Amino acid sequence: MYYFCQMQKMKKLLFILLMVISLVSCSEYSKVLNKGKNAERYKLAEELYKKGEYKKAIPLFEKLTGPYAGKPQMERIQYMIADSYFQNEDYSLSSYYFTKFISNYPKSSKVEEAAFLSAYSYYLSAPKFSLDQTDTYKALEALQSYINTYPDSPRIKEANKYYDLLTQKLEKKDFEVARQYYHTEYYRAAMVAFDIFNEEHLGSIYKEDAVYFKFKAAHDLAINSVLTKKKQRLLDAKEIYDKFKKEFPDSDKLKEMDRLLKDIDQALEESQQQILSVEAQK
Image (tube, rainbow, N blue to C red):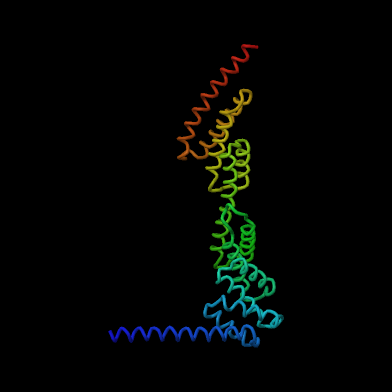
């Protein structure tokens, strides 16, 4: 029991000591941040940066951007600001500051790394496919610029990977827009949208699905058409089926498409009989 009580006292004392150290540390930090000399701010900011305390380092660095403007230290300060935001996962600001660094110090030994991290920051801040893709386009532009400028970089494989992933995300967005036309029964708009999709995204991983849904849209449009338009639309749907089967002969979608093709053939036969009946009544 005595040993347990002593341990509890030691824990309390240790907690109090840590609290005191923390308060003193915070007090010293606030003093340097608000009233310290620039040399003191620079020293503390660099120490915090090296320790990985980026959130505390950033306000100190930003206090130095005015006093050190045009001085040799400013190159390092700007890079550490950008990297601090990156490490702090504030990617919108890190992309901005890395881009600013590249503009201000194009001959810096850090410029390639900054170019990659700027592009990567845009990549990390790019939203999911269903949202506005402004940052995605910025990321693609930045990555393409990096790939073109540093084709022999050891990071080039990684840059290409991110570029491909972003491209696929834009493809998915366009594909989902086209598919939404189908699900809302705007079949003609869906067919046009899928055609545009395949023209703009050659070699897309969604190409098979795009042609499949175009066929389904053509099928549904034709089946529900008025007699005067039905035959041609049914024939158009059959043509899409033939193209799909030729291009994707091993597709697992063909089983369903074969069933829909039977509907088309039956509808063609019925529409032909109806046409003959109407002509006979004239």
